[in-house]
Length: 171
Image 1 (tube, rainbow, N blue to C red):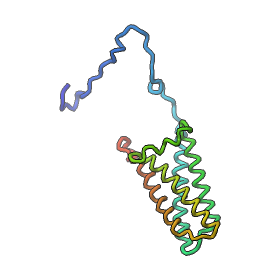
Image 2: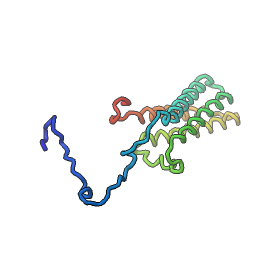
Image 3: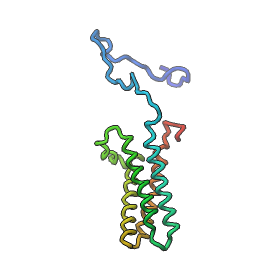
Image 4: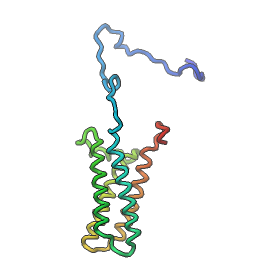
């Protein structure tokens, strides 16, 4: 095949040697031959997850700014927590095999999705520690600031998940 042609392919497709036999053939990958029809509603849990977690991060940062020097209030903290909880629960609705969810953190070095999950859990844990500080009337300034920084990194990870060169419309 030509090396530098723009009109001729650079790839030769050859049939598998097993196709030359007279035996009956069967399809091994039915997902490609008969793909499932999608309605668009399959992605709704991820949209809910993204929106609720980003709203929770924004509300948490706004709450820290509004209550500077004063301990955060319980009602706003509970509203933020309900957003975090509902967002995390909705993300589980998108999983194909829920019992393998723990494996999602296996690729932290190279996967922005794994980092997004980690920072979501860290933000939820930071919110919980801040909530305990509010209930016990402790000083929550440093924990709140650390949780806000984790939330900012969470939003950064969420934005990087959809920066795919393979999907130019997202990039």
